[in-house]
Image (cartoon, rainbow, N blue to C red):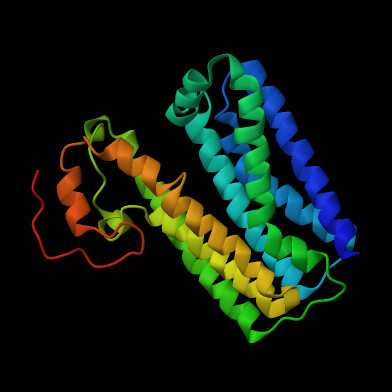
Amino acid sequence: MRIYIIGQAVGLVTLYFFIFFIAGTIKKNNSIVDIGWGLGFVITAWFTLFISRSFFVSNIIITLAVTIWGMRLFIHIMRRNLGKGEDFRYAAWRKEWGKWVIPRAFLQVYMLQGLFMLTVASPFILLNSMESSEFTWITALGAVIWMIGFFFESVGDYQLEQFKKNPANKGTILRTGLWKYSRHPNYFGESTMWWGIGLAAFGSGAGAAAFISPFVITFLLLFVSGVPMLEKSFEKRPGYQSYKEVTSVFIPLPPKKRKYEI
């Protein structure tokens, strides 16, 4: 049963990102893949739940948590990206790759994201591939941690969206709300949510492998595609260096006692 469910999940995710690859190639906009990130988790969660018929309390709770997170992220990124050109990261790769843009995008954008999705989704894929699961106090603790993470990601994204809507804020740095305590509160929330899901799956019987997911997503956010890219793009903005000196990069902490220098 376990191998069958995992194999079905691999096939589904591969097909899912192949469809996005076709769409992105036709539109010459590979940032379309970002829109599909959250939705892909929702589809995979429900697909593995139903084909395994793992309708246990823990499985349903984790599937609902993934659905709430995934649909919010899907709608948020779709609203942000629709009608706009290719994101600067993908545009830079398109220029760098030249005539090899199509095969490299297929492998390094779409299929690589599919691999990351399977890795990050592994807690609920593993749990849904089991014959039974148990709701424990560790499962409940994981759910609480997930709620904390969801708060930071959703509120952080909302505050940033409202900040960007004001033309007067163009080229400046958001320093209020959750952004007063972390330079990337939404990324912190994303990481925290997956630690919550990993812990909940572990507590329900998925095993220690459930922690591979939060470790990978945290590593990616901190060292690969999240924090480093945004930090680099903000370096020349007025006031960023002073903001950087007093504000935690990831984990929300009280600002250091030092006045901003603009």
